[in-house]
Image (cartoon, rainbow, N blue to C red; front, side):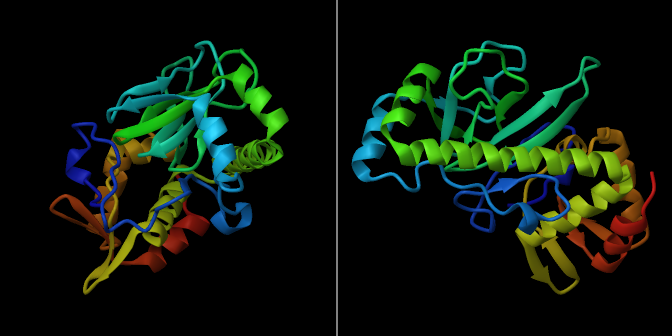
Length: 261
């Protein structure tokens, strides 16, 4: 994956290539410590082949192109979506139209909560950040399956628990860290997830636009663009064609701990 800085104006979404380390059942979110909250448990991991078949028989498959909306904030809610391939970005939109990315969810995770059995309204939106395939499990059918298959019920509880920890960690970051600190933290986190060592630094081998980064740290695209330019001028990062190389992670570490807006 290449961090496509040059694509910021075109609105391209993150995509995966062989260079990515973020494979399997994983997620990308802003948190003080990924290790502290653990990893998202795959919903179907503990099910037997027969149980998996029973669950998938109740589902409705849907294929999405990159950028296509899966569910919308305020729309009627019905069940969950199990991700079979690709990535889904979940985000909240304020009444003023500002977006904040809650997380990017990958294969094996489900999205569409928290009312997994209910028929309320969605509290946030989900959009495919790459070509994706999902299986919708309607609430009524999912309730019956959970009563019949204990390991599915446990998987739902574990998944909701993890999501609760994720969104709590995000709220803590937004409430206690400055925007500059959050951007430095995010760049270091992306380096851990997708970093490829090179002679002049560490390449972040992932495709995120300036808008994507802005939505994750709670800033505007313009602010992120200006901040990355300042970092480049100081030799902290380097824009090489359409890629970002982290040259001074020590400086980002300092910014993460003591930065200001």
